[in-house]
Image 1: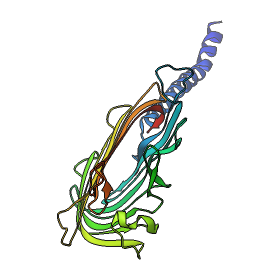
Image 2: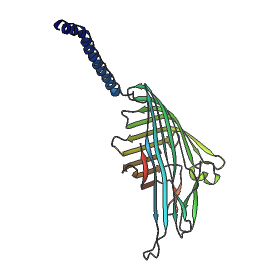
Image 3: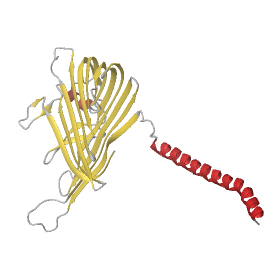
Image 4: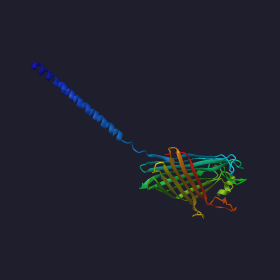
Length: 312
């Protein structure tokens, strides 16, 4: 009996050893697989060379009155807007593009001109730069500014035709130096800048400094641009651009000014409150004031809106 038991134990030893080795190997394989899985989950993809950021939105309001003793008119207003920047950066090459546009109308019941355009803007800028020193780029820049449809200045019982598609429009081409100390701020200076002011409608050419028998006016001068794109706070965004241009002529030092500002805050995921302003001064644009005098004047527009928007 003892010999039989001893024989069984001797025969079982290889099987027990094999089982223990198999279990250890299986545990090691599981640990290795888990370790590989953890290492894979910790690996992050390389950052993209592209960055797209901006604001898309729609603001609307309506007022209805019925037997309202205090007076007033039924009215409705709405505007759609977008301010989108597309940025590309790889090695020493940088390409920045921005589209800033909006369009709005209003309806005021029981007035001479119930339908009125309230805002209309199309601004596009793109610049391509090569970094020759830290934060400094040699850059080529192009921009286009116009509006979509006919614009009028409204009086109580009359309206004055003041703008249209490509009447006016401003096309800028330049070569200069761009300073980008960080992802928020940039400054651009070009002593080699050209501007083409187009007015395709002959009725408007005198108002924008274009000869009556021509469709455009070309100028060569100096331009300066500054840009701010701040999106470091969640749901809060500030986009601003300032552009100055002065021609190499007897008007050198008389700057054309464009300053656009967009501030947006998004809450409850889809609701958005925004402030958009535009300040302009063009030496060749003549505007009639309340005193009837026609001359250069500072132009300013502000739009405060509450509506639905998407910020990214």
